Image (tube, rainbow, N blue to C red; front, side, top):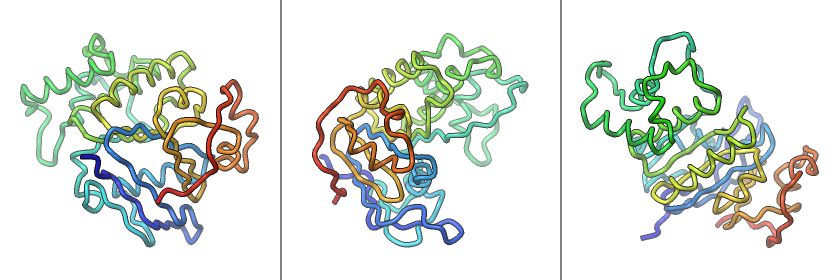
Length: 255
């Protein structure tokens, strides 16, 4: 079956009476790997939070696995853009990942063997198993990003949502991370917010340009027209630097 797992219809959202998203329509099907591109303040993170049920739309509808957002949270893994943790706190990499198994009323000592096996699998998927006993605060920025993605994976979600997973990572580590995500995409649907246009174009399956409205492209081919639409207030020649020229049909809203 290829029924949609996420359906967004005529969604509007404002913050302090200022429109952030308007007339948004988006359909996500199983197995997709979608990049959300657009300028800062364009609504990419807000769209993720609406799909997660962390924000409530002003009007319109969102269905996740046919249910309202929040009803299927156990089927979604999420890594937010800003990760805050005390780097001096003596917590191991393995314990950080196991935190993805925490539930209300469940103590730290109650991780089961199955939980630990899931954490091992997630760390191996992110190529971080050898660091399991390392103190989390000793990791580099790129390594820390990987363990937080592993934490999002530990419940074996069907959908993985990542907000700027390559922030503050050099180009080599960005490419390595997207190679891992491309492999994960064989079993997990992925939605990623990113500004790394060149890397995105060679790894994802489709692109949604987000700048208050959403323009969806059912392929990963990115051209000048798309960038101008997504980055209306940005210098497109800098955003697209080094990106291969490709051909894409005219923008059309998803229906």
